[in-house]
Length: 397
Ligand SMILES: *Cc1c(COP(=O)(O)O)cnc(C)c1O
Image (tube, rainbow, N blue to C red; front, side, top):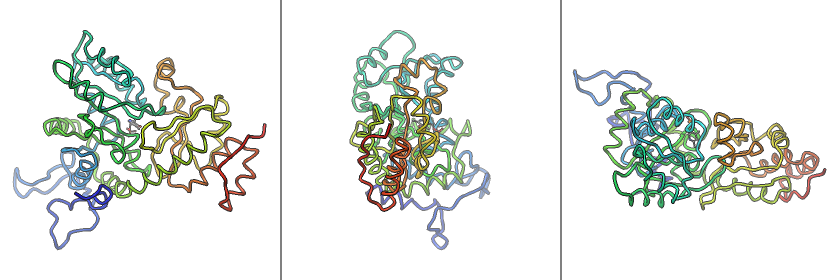
């Protein structure tokens, strides 16, 4: 087995490609239908059901996650929804308390109109998880968690959770982990005991902010077949052009994440010491990630910072080659009812930063300019000559 970085730039050839015309880059099979050799024959017939470009992508995604089956969807939410709907009417979903806003919205919809009971629990509290799993009421079919959580970066112990589920009497619920924050380059949930690894490929996997896509990866073949059946029935498979863009993004995943992880650590070290930062949230695990969050102690200041940064662009997403900044309270998490946002510990002053492939020094200057506009005129000059010290001192005023 070659290392992951090698595998990422060596996708398998398109199935059936003739040796004399074998392309070096995976072609985009931009077609809805395939001409069949004869009635009932042929490997592909219709792109909703199968497409060579998507097949190559899914082979790469399966290798990344250590999965038997990986399925690419039109968006992260299509992937999340495919997993949540494995719970049938009359069954329950046990979901983490701190989840992506869109996932929370879908859970509410399923509880209100889908006949599924939804229980929320802090998945770091294993006693609470055990109590929720064994409580009276509909049996839990799916346990759905995110780690690290977004935007507060709480870490859930996937292995401990998987052990707990295995030790309970009765049918073992499926454990699904939304891995969008780290990607399988940094964390492989299936190897830690999860049944389903889910992610928004819109973020780190695609990495360029130019497509929406989602992935579900599983170790169990029968579960993979069930998901593939449903995806074909519902028509949520990723189209060929997006599949190709995602393949293109995967080629640079290793270098992007190594570089962005180092930059994130650098930015975190800068912000940790900064007088205008009241609290810094970073990934608690060894894996750095590319996202960090800060509280300034003032909603007004946070809003000002959001308008002042130039390289950190105000964007709802994260994980792109371009740095971004957002205020989740009013943006990605705005659809969550206010009391639920507060209960999950989210504050209106919290800013989420995602670092890109910019020069780290430029990002520090951008942040210093936004945090301390008076001081920054001097700092920006010194950074221009690459002499930025990274110790900001006190802001004026
Ligand atoms: C963005 C995101 C999603 C949804 O993905 P889309 O591609 O936007 O549909 C789900 N989970 C997490 C953790 C996310 O960050």
